[in-house]
Image 1 (cartoon, one colour):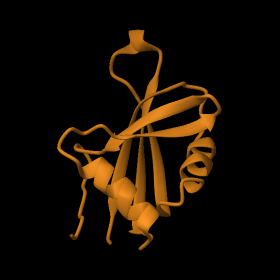
Image 2 (spheres, helix red, strand yellow):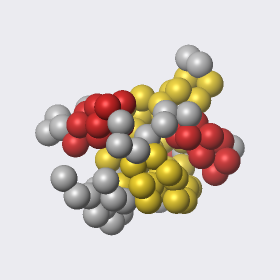
Image 3 (tube, one colour):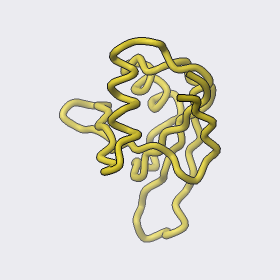
Image 4 (tube, one colour):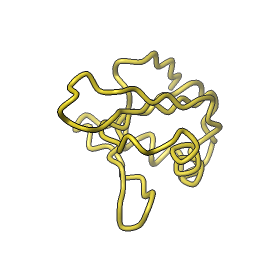
Length: 102
C-alpha cells in the first residue's frame, strides 16, 4: 500500500504534533511521514484541524479493516483515542493528495 492521508477535523489548539503522532502511532496503521496542524479559518470555533500523512501502510488485517472502513461510501471514519474516554473523529483526507493503490 502506498501513501495515505487522514484528516482530523476538530482538535484543541493546545494539542501538539507529538501528541497526534503518538496517538496515531498507537493504532498501528503504518509509518507516519509527517503531521500537519492547521488553524481553522473560522476563528470562532476555537479549534484546529490536522492531517496525518503516511508513506507506508502496514500489510496486516488490522490495517486492511481500518482502510476499508475509511474508504467506505458512508465515510463513517474511525475514532482515535487520545485521552480515554476522549477521542478524535478521523476520516480519509479529501483535500490533500492521496495516492492509494488498490
